[in-house]
Image (cartoon, rainbow, N blue to C red; front, side, top):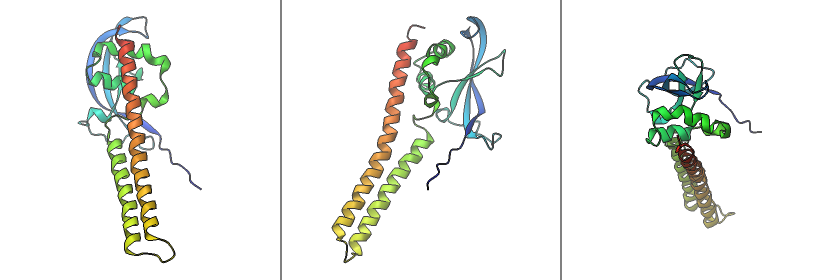
Length: 193
């Protein structure tokens, strides 16, 4: 029986990307000092794990923190973070934008799907898996089994290779496209800010 392993991840501070003043929509629009911080996700079993202070921000979760209340940490969904990275929204607009989109956010909106190390690992795994199936098929041609036609063995292996590569890369592409649509939706919602 297969038991999936889920590793709980927690954010660990990497560095402050920006400090700014903006209206705090959670405190009656009073002017507040905010910091925009980058965090790397580390296993909850090892929350003090060392993180690279020079980590690529593309591989980090971003969060807003008010200077008056250090415990008031608000993570940004990946779509809003990427919109900020691409300069589609100004830093001072982030608190109001986050407040505006909060009611429609789901847990999956915080997962990283755009150009991260995980995507590279998935691509490598997909191509490696495909290559393994092709190699198995080629071996079937070189070392034929009298009870099983070599051409069928190779065809099945090639089909499995295509399904592995296409399935994993298609899954990745679907998640990426979903996130890009979400970014466009956030851009439209925040255009009036």
